[in-house]
Image 1 (cartoon, rainbow, N blue to C red):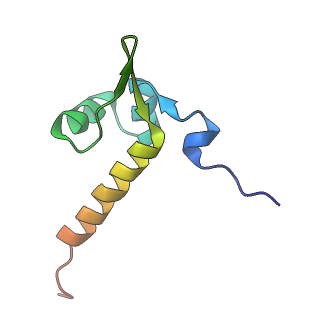
Image 2 (image 1 turned 90 degrees about the horizontal axis):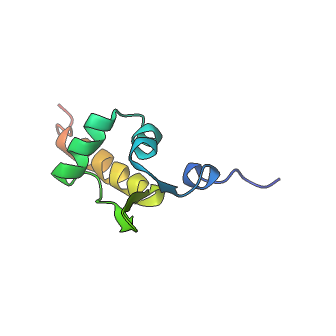
Length: 77
């Protein structure tokens, strides 16, 4: 049996702003803030259209998750 395609391939790899925010299950305002802060990647722009790569969003969230785990590590206390 074939495995399911990754989420970013099921609904298209390239996301516009609202779709990218929905993909991450965050508000558009939070999405914009995280892009401005550098937490999430800048979009690719083509003919005036901003598109985010879902795989790059996945990578950014995994990096954020790993950073959060390190920051929350209390050394066993």
